[in-house]
Length: 174
Image 1 (tube, rainbow, N blue to C red):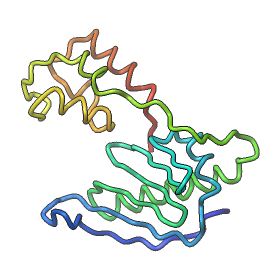
Image 2: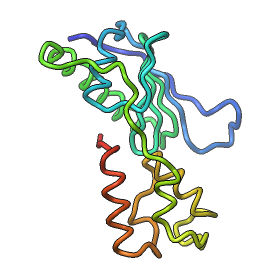
Image 3: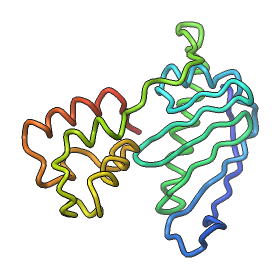
């Protein structure tokens, strides 16, 4: 086992304390630098940095960044959600570490969905039925994994299927 524990810190963003979402920093008891390229290979990281070592994931509209001795998670509903994500990451870290001899580490940043590829499939009416002011905003949220094909009511069946196929190549689940 690589990671045995952490100390969690929950807070509201300093830039705007009125935000409803919370942020979390987990201060790790162990250094996880060596597992980061393996996690990148397993989880399909959003961005991998060699120096300083860091792995950023986009999961369900949240940015999660792993550093050698801390994990940062944004846009949390509550402390329970933070606990769920941190325990999932702890399991992933430890399982990946145990299996590292059977896999190739990845030091590359994988391909990411592109806003304009998503926008091409949308109706571009800026109707607001999805709850967003424009199709461009919707597309940017789809890139982050927050919105998907079913969230755009006027999207026709053919483009809904195309969008689903396009986004599936970039996503994974908690």
